[in-house]
Length: 457
Image (cartoon, rainbow, N blue to C red; front, side, top):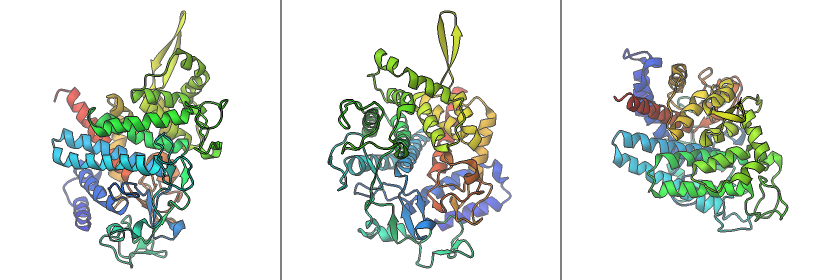
């Protein structure tokens, strides 16, 4: 892996071309980031495998951990990256390599079903119930010390590759290179229940699997089943939990306890986005009476594209659902009726441009709905952001030790505000898995392939 990084560095300093104009460097960087994932995830079917850590060497956990917090969101990124990679490889006629990626997708989907949804946690009453409810932080706390996991996650590292607070470096490793680990943090000792932002994070990945994998593939069908069970659970459709008069779009744990607003337990405001996302996955249960009863939620969601959202969590949740379900419309009064003009692309730009996310969400929307970019300025923004990703991987070690100004000083770029991306604020210091870059690059390549096909080239 370090040899590849050296090649990238030499490429960067050579006279082949200016970095900001050379996509070949991003291709090399993709290969390096992809190999770098061995420090964050071990594909497989046993508990803990195929669950990707978002942050490694997290400072507030002692610098030597693999951290699995916010796991549903990171799993969504991981699934989406794998699905988009599979499609790129198939377009490039690399079916043998694509098949390996397809196996990784299958492993991650079964990891969700068997260990997050069919929860084996002792805190959950309903065991072996595949119903759409899942737990987070389900990786065993002793995961590093099972089988050969310790050696796997510390490949080519030594115990000296630890953080030096004075230099902001992990031993002699370049900034961004994952350091030594000897513990798991946010693990199954205290698993947390799902929240709607975690559900939306997983849905983001499932939508890409559903779109990119063949319709007759096991992965396509499993992604659909998981997604529809999740949305049905969030809707509280069966009234299985809570009580007979429980309101719709209120999330209960299997024990019948309400999840508080602070736990992401009230999904009323995002109901229209969830329903339209279910339609994307092939759900046909929506009807006139349901639409009528959901009219206030529809109004809220439609006006949401115009309303400022100081909380970036609300922006990414609303935008992700809008992109999956192609929800947003602009109502135009015409004599006798209201004409609704499709406006999801406009809404994405309106909601996300404040944080420089519009390129990512437009590419994501385009891939799901076979659209192409209309503004070349957005494509230029995407290319610039990809070019600026650090060669060794995204990181932020705090106290100014970060790739400041690059936009990649964040644990997941397209969920966090601009000041954290730019390294002006620390966020949660550590080494980051870089799956946001990998997914972004794949979406960019798929966009170019689609434009090429439309031009008949």
